[in-house]
Image (cartoon, rainbow, N blue to C red; front, side, top):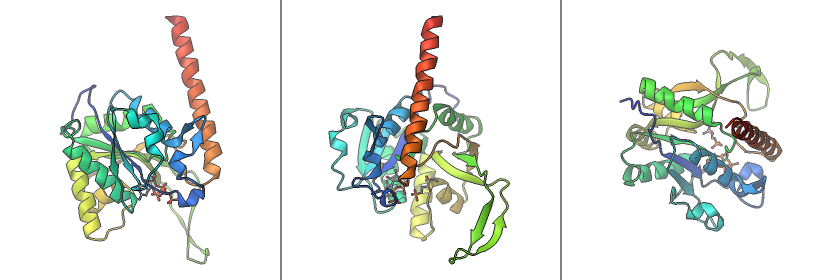
Length: 252
Ligand SMILES: Nc1ccn([C@@H]2O[C@H](COP(=O)(O)OP(=O)(O)OP(=O)(O)O)[C@@H](O)[C@H]2O)c(=O)n1
Ligand SMILES: C[C@](O)(CO)[C@H](O)COP(=O)(O)O
């Protein structure tokens, strides 16, 4: 069922219950600050600045002691649930809240976006939503692989070179029919399928899933060296926005 409506509102589940092991920081990486705000705030504010997004459902760690001190905690458009042991568990908790919440349960489509991806562009989100509206098919933002890709054994001995045509980095948001995605994740978990993103659950259950070409600077902040890169990307994006709003005001 496509929803050709410019006012289509798509709720977003944001898994934010991780502990950031690979970041090796004193606090969960989503609460590290870049340009004066936590990564989580950057991400949620970016999402809520999109015309088709008015509800964010955050999945938080059961022992999260940081969120309540953020202004986000007072935002009526931000709801929270308790996440789970794995990302997919956190996503499922958020999806069930979308399906049960009267503010969001009439939405046929839902997006899932990592808290650790604050640099996502509004245009890419628009492209993902337009794809769903025009085709009725779910999809994921993805960036084409640019490097030669090698497959090795556990001893890091190269086995072969992977063909890289039609090979993509899966990004987020990922957009799917809410009920179908809940069903796919539940079945995948029940049957022990390895799912590291929403599309892998949909693929496992035979649902359609498309890639929508997107910017490669929609990075997932994972390791320490990602922080400076993300800070630079965000600074560039905010500067571009300032310049465009300045030139708009000068023309007005
Ligand atoms: N049980 C989990 C694990 C991860 N996440 C979220 O899923 C997103 C992507 O996961 P990842 O980058 O792996 O974050 P962490 O799991 O925190 O990182 P690490 O694997 O290094 O511990 C993050 O926003 C993270 O907070 C979650 O909500 N629940
Ligand atoms: C969902 C995701 O960001 C797509 O690339 C990725 O699979 C998350 O993996 P992680 O190991 O939970 O960071």
